[in-house]
Image 1 (cartoon, rainbow, N blue to C red):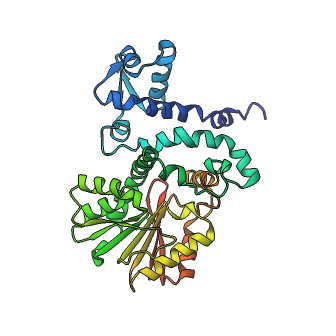
Image 2 (spheres, rainbow, N blue to C red):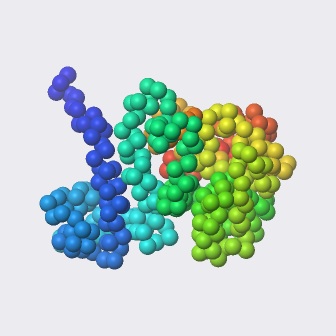
Image 3 (tube, one colour):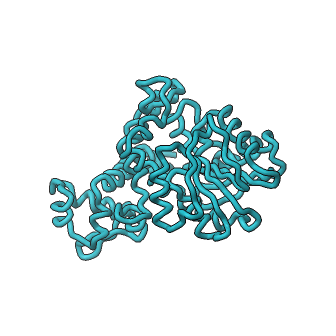
Length: 338
């Protein structure tokens, strides 16, 4: 038996945090932004990034082995993906989420065992019970911008898929609830010139949203509406969207938000909910399951859920038609028609 099995998979998983931390440190140091200017050798990068020479070669070659950099004739360069998504000088930069993961989540996940034993958040709320999990993020302009830019990066692919796959032709207005920087409104507006819409979010988000929308010259069709989706009525529109929102909250709060959306929609209107939906058998979508554990780390009651769960909650709220549609990667959407 010992000749037929090996511990490789266990070791790779158990020590798997090594690779992600190399990537997070590379983002923090600005490796990909530096290489966006052109290929460079280890000596150049050592000087440019202010690194000690001892482990630079191991660090850079580890990024090559991880598929984050390419190397030719001793010179390093970005991959197409890292050049597009991890260069701070590009609007497609999604490193804000990784910067926040490095600064916050990496340490908090070290207390996962305590979270599993207590059921309590392991972030800033751990030392300040009763605080909102978003207080530290929304209270810091730097963290807020990182978070909003990161949400754009993590949502962009799904937003483009929603713009392409959903039947927008029958609708005229839409509103993204908690739409952050505005990735989904922008992608939908770019793909469908007949639509007008916007983002309903906390007031502090407004300037960041307006700046992002203006960069696409869409300010005439996309507007910001300030509000709190728990304490204020949701805006009325033909289509309401909730992306990476419901998983932050407990079941009662999830149902309350869905009920508010149902009230705000006209007859025939649609609610789109997109997340890293866990597969119904809870076996395949590793990202969705790990995201749900992240909700344990970050929130008092949040959790991710399956498409079947989402459809059930929508039917309970009164939606006459529900379905699940895969978007790309780990993301899918639940659609409810009033």
